[in-house]
Length: 467
Ligand SMILES: C[S@@+](CC[C@H](N)C(=O)[O-])C[C@H]1O[C@@H](n2cnc3c(N)ncnc32)[C@H](O)[C@@H]1O
Image 1: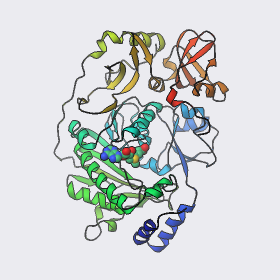
Image 2: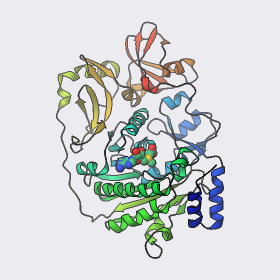
Image 3: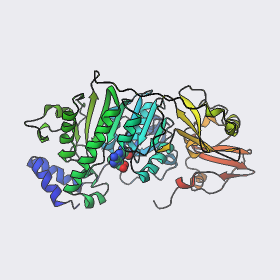
């Protein structure tokens, strides 16, 4: 493929001649295709047994797999059930290395469209608080969709710049992912438009953004907490030099060495601007497209020192809005439609209402009032004229066993495609809301109406022919 001359000249300057040749040659190879199984819905072993697909494990994450270039995984009902996310294999590394745990407070600061968010959420198993943010309002829409499609039920979605978030969440998080906006040199094969938009000025501009984002992230981490910085670019200015500068400006942070998988390399201490090689940087990691099956990434895992000054935040107790009369229809819906659902018994979440929308929101948060919020938790539905209408997101966070009435299509039943296309499907079920599933995994809602199903699948999520 044709890559910018100024870019290849730069890389020639940084890399040894043999390595440079191998690196440049990789742009003429086919890129590796990957999918990551959604452990919120199914464990990777069961998934592999269930599908008859040619899948090879991605070494650095137990839920990641390579699939053949000729295969179209988005054209399968399991994709609509959120069983897997299509993700470039090296992009699976940052969340795997950050490794959040159930019950923690985790921030994904530059999150859209949400690939790494869904991976962080799966590791958290629905427990704890996951704040996911992006400053771009259009990209936040895609982020919300992915949070919902993948059944993430413990997320708050914000549309903010880091400084404003830091006002609300000082010293709050156990782990933060900064998957920074970057010049995208590792995206040339995947998104050829990145070739056109590449320039040395773009690198400089990204450095400014990365510096500010990291500064904001540092304020939000608790002492002893971890910050994972990643880019999908090769420019040392955005990688080794950015981290060296961050460490110079934040003496309360240190580098936690990243264990190297086969083909991974250490970050290059000699590529910093500090005099001599900056040994702190050798604990960071590089994935190169000529050494691994992936497009390439840079990763730095940082820890705030345990004795760093702790900043306090005040926990906010939401008003007991769930006692409001408007919510009666919601509770009736739960009783009739979801008799086995345990969602309301946990003390970690509370039913909240925002205008006509009902959420199950994590408790233990500071007041979110100052923030632009796209989701204040798991959107369960809306109450209109004293009637509760469940959301698509509600269906996606449930399991089949929760529901009183279920239509469970086999994956090869032509009706399942009709359903996700939004068409009417003929089936005899009782009156009321029905959870529609494929092989036991929720897809959405329908309403029983005689011998047919009124299709309530979200219009914005419909299967598109030809895509
Ligand atoms: C590399 S992409 C993130 C990809 C995402 N982590 C994923 O795995 O799907 C970087 C994101 O940073 C966002 N961004 C740029 N500047 C930002 C800022 N100042 N604060 C927060 N997000 C920002 C961009 O809109 C973009 O969506």
